[in-house]
Every structure is written in C-alpha cells, then in structure tokens.
Image (cartoon, rainbow, N blue to C red; front, side, top):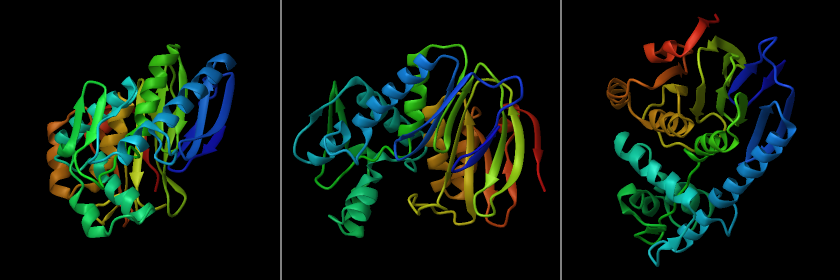
Length: 293
C-alpha cells in the first residue's frame, strides 16, 4: 500500500499493516490515522479537531485568534494546551537563535493574509521576547503582533494525541508531519519538484518525522535559497516540526552550529541541485537507509 502525501511517500510493510485506516481533512491539510480500533480513530479525530479549534487562526473565535485580536490591548485567558504550546515555542525560539518564532504571524497573517500591516511594519513586530505568559494568560505586548502556530502546531497536535490515545501502536500524519509508534514502516523521501523518490529507509524505533520547504507556498522566510527541503527525525513531534521550520530558515553556518549543539536531531537536506546531506543522527534512527539515484 502506497499513499502519496504532500512531502513524503509512506509505504506500509507487509505484515505490519493496521486493521483500520481513515483519511480526514484537518488543520488545512489531509490527515491519515491508522489504529487497530475504530473507536480509537474516532477519539483521535475528535481530539485533533478540538486542538485545531483552539489553535487555528482561520477560526475567528479560536484562542490564538483572540490572543492576536487583543495584541497590545489586554491578556487573554486560554486553555492549558495553548499555554503549553506557546511556552514550548518560546523555549524553541531561544534554542534556535530566534529563527523559529511564532510571532511571525505579524508577517504571515497581518501582512500577507489580511493586508492590515505593510511589510516593514510587520517585520519589526516579529519578536518572541514580546510574548508574555503569566499563568493561564497570554499577552502580545504590541499592537499588530500575531501568533502563527503553523510551524509547530501539527507536531504538537501529534504528540498530544499520541499521549491522549495511550495505545500500543499506530501511525498518524498531518500533512508533512508524522508519528510512528509500536511498528516499523518503510519511508521514502520524495523530491517535491520532480515527484521522484530520492531516499528510502525504515524507522528503527518510535519516531517523529517533519518536513519543511517553500515549494508549495513561500511561507518561510529563509536566508538559504539553495535548500529545497529539510526532513527532521526526532523522538518528539513538537520539536521535529519546529526544528524543521527553524533549520529551513537558518543560514548554513547557524544550521551547522545548531546541529552540533543538538545531538538528538536527525536531518536530511535536499538541495535545489539535487545534492543531499544526511547527518549521523538521522542515520542512527534508520535501518536499510539508501539513496535512490
């Protein structure tokens, strides 16, 4: 069985297939849920939809939309999940030298989507240090600021639904973000422009996979125009998602520094000239790894 996803092919090993698979539309993309029990699939879908209703800036009354609406005006009381994902995002911002920053919403939402700011104004408002978290209240200190969880939300949702389900094995994907546990799968990384497979491997253990690139929409501000996409392997999906976004935005020197400092991050980098870089950590998460010419 082969399923084409936006960034990756996923090929299920014979003998490891699960009894039930459902495809849903979640968080602006397609989600695949493979679990043994149909009731668990329903539980997973409902939980993911609940998180989407809190995080999506396309839903006007979501908690994140309310935070953005009252930027520079007043703090907004939010649920524990939104506090958690924002606190994690701020930690990751510091860890990635600011290249991951959820306040990029000033640019992606208020400038690009809504046109309520000009580009120069929007860029000046991107600063994760201007996000205040006090108890269960979130405050953006300047008017025009906005939170965009697009670079972390899907990974966070995968990690949360995994904890919530508490089942022995499964596979859930949301677009280019995936969690595999209790089983192994053969995974093929796809060149998104040529639509051809460039690498194959099998996960050695429970694993999160996240891919970032600008080939569908130019939504990540990057200083490295030679990179087509980055695939990150990590044990935690929140971090896999955010790190993939941050690494894609970093210049080459900062990327090398970050990877030297964070030995738990596996990366597969596809350059526009079709050259590939794979770090040793990526290989440690894999079996039967090979490059397809």
